[in-house]
Amino acid sequence: MIYDHRTYVCKPGMIKAHVELYQAMGFAVQSKHLGKPVLWATTEVGDVNSYVHVWAYKDLADRTAKRAAMWADPAWLAYVKKSGELGALVHQENKILIGQAFAMA
Image 1 (cartoon, helix red, strand yellow):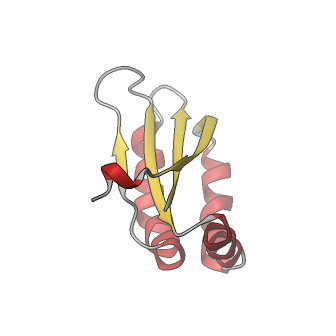
Image 2 (cartoon, rainbow, N blue to C red):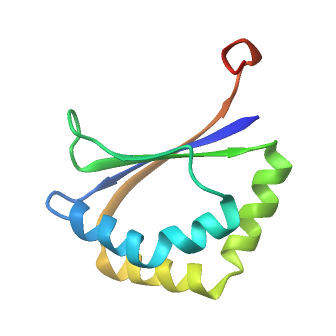
């Protein structure tokens, strides 16, 4: 099992609008292709302009196939366009994490 851990940082004062847009246009279509996230959370302490989401995949091939299908979906492309127009995002960091068997039992 691998985990795609993504951290996004928004401009100050823009996170609420960005999360609302994602909830309205992005979450359903992304979940349709990737499954429900392991975690989708905003930050309460630290960089309060950031949020994290984590998606689980069987392996990198599973991730590649699911994300390709998502990027071919017109509803996802419409969300990405609106997100770009909103202009809230300033930084993104992605990590691929490998789950360790002893902690997953």
